[in-house]
Amino acid sequence: MPPRVVFVGVPGAGKSTIAAEVARRLGAAHIDTDDLVATSAAMSVSDIFVTEGEAAFRARERAAVTAALQAEAAVVSLGGGAVIDPATRDDLRHQQVAWLQVSLSDAATRAGLNQARPLLLGNVRTTLARLLDERTPWYAEVATRSFDTSTASAEEIAEQVVRWLSAPDGGQVEPAASAAPADDGDPKPGSVTP
Image 1 (cartoon, helix red, strand yellow):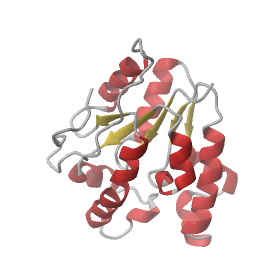
Image 2: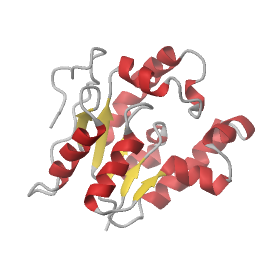
Image 3: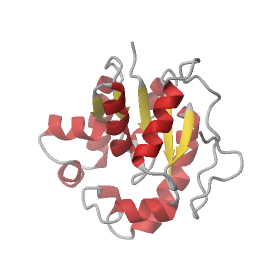
Image 4: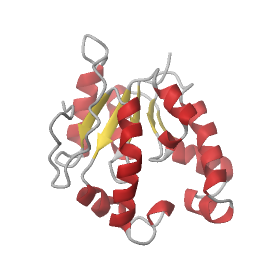
């Protein structure tokens, strides 16, 4: 049995927080691939970037994603850049994937003060805008459903995800729309919301 649900989204979308809450509500294990990478390397993600470089981190991340996707009935949160890897995107096509969308302003507020996010050092807002532009098509490609975290609490989103997963169709819905939330926090027309 594959993971119950896999969370994707940019830094600051709430993947780890919401995944942990969904896991608690489902009585399932929560697996965070950034935590797997840090544990296996015996150093923080930031330290891996500094000492080994991004390419080494991405190789470690790919191994962590492969391991996490083997976990039965777990709730998995991927690092924001995991979707860069075509093999990961291919693996996610066979999973229930919840894309946590967030406005640029909310992501910058949430992630901007977290020094453990190596790709966000410097101008956080500019970097997040670039990551949103680059990664949104990949998130849309793998997503089964999207949830806008800009205007709801982690608990509210977790409840929406649990309801979705508990639906008679087992959460099988049309793929998420490719539009990211507008910067004002409102989803753009055509986005899939609960």
